[in-house]
Image (cartoon, rainbow, N blue to C red; front, side, top):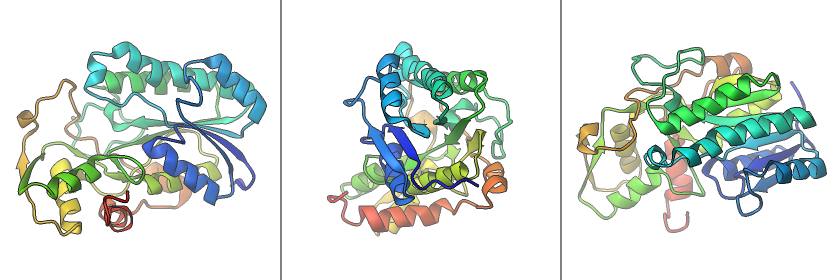
Length: 294
């Protein structure tokens, strides 16, 4: 295991992103020097400016939490999705190799087609069903093919947490205004709390992990189950009606089952991710209790 105190980290998306902001906080708590960046600080596609930043700061780690995540819009904006989800990570991989720093890149459960009925492990075949999934997978594969060994790719899913709007926060807001909500029941995945994701990412750093790791909270849920649990924890009187995905047609196809197996993470760190229900309660009690404040 390596000591992280005093190490320096550049966090792309660290000022504004759902993952990036929490990751920056957690890195600070672990005594790393953090340099959080947003797109207003730099052009993520300008490799020369990024190179100048790395020359100046000499970081030990580059965290890439930036992605084109508008899943449906990506179907019509394939080039923009490709630039952020494929071109950017490849560029960062090149720079990490040049400056000898570790690259930590975040990926997605959308690289799978959802035809399994048991949790996906890192070695399972990929088969994305959307432009978003295709461009994210392309980024992952090109990084692994780069020949630079010090790359960690973290596949995660169904994110909720402080600092930014997410599914859970939206559902609670809607539930306060409506008598009932219709939520999809035939998509199952791994709800993941961003503070836990950040903690587990830092554990992988300590253990000098490289390659692909699934990092999500334990357990599985449908969107309907996640919504119902969030409303129940918030003590809001709102009925949840389970409906099929066909009730809400989308441009991009979602995997019907994208639960991720975290055995590899546990073998590396000795940590079993806590259940998503427990993490959800933490989020609601600590951040959504007064939703106006969050």
